[in-house]
Amino acid sequence: MNRKQILISILAAFCMYATAEAQRIKGSDTLLPLTQELAEEYLAEHPDREVIVTGGGTGVGLAALPEKTTDIAMASRRIKFSEKMKFAEINLDAKEVIVAYDALAVVVNPSNPVDSLTREQLEAIFRGKITNWKEVGGEDRKIVVYSRETSSGTYEFFKESVLDNKNYMSSILSMPATGAIIQSVRQTKGAIGYIGLAYLNRYVKALAVSYDSGRHYAYPSVGTAADGTYPIVRPLYYYYDAAREAAVSPFISFALSPAGQESVLRQGFVPVK
Image: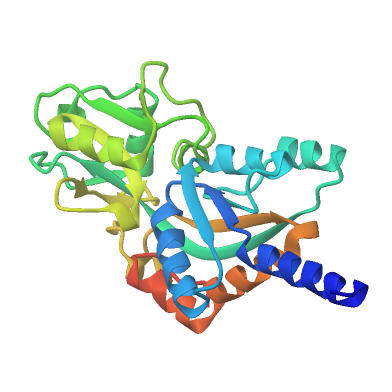
């Protein structure tokens, strides 16, 4: 084998390695099932590629970007100023893409007779000012309040939108994942919590919510989120390092394509387009 042939062989081996390099996506548990499904559909069209999707929360995903342990960070909130500053210190140019919108459902145990709450009532409950369901038209039963942990983007968004950026009650029960909130609310008659619309199932009951002091209420659904009737709606993001744009753009382009956005809709999220 001459020198030219050796060089061609080395380049071919390198290209095979680059093609086989797994793309890593990490972060928001809200985005986890959506991105897993998108990855499966993407790989069906590109069987020579590999995508690894893991959760852990928005904070975990964004922290992984500068550590170079993820290529795309899934986030259910916008990047914080402090995170931007941290990225700037290491010359990481974080690019933002909205991949879908999500309605955040407030859920209670199915046996709870309460069907609706105003934003003000929700704020009082999650801040520990209202502690018994009889104060909002329910049974004489203690309210048990569940929340996501502080690293969760869902925790941050709920605090901003529902609590008007006020602090949660100090005795709130923090759960590591959405599934844990569903299980806890299902098993506790006096429980209340919040989850992404795509996770809603028969084991918990979604409440109608009013953001105009009780004049209009709406239940969470793709339709009410899309037309603006339901008030607790947020964008869902992918963040990536601009230096990795060539590597991540094929998957992100698929997620934003008509096929990808159709998948977004099928899974209970609101499409961007």
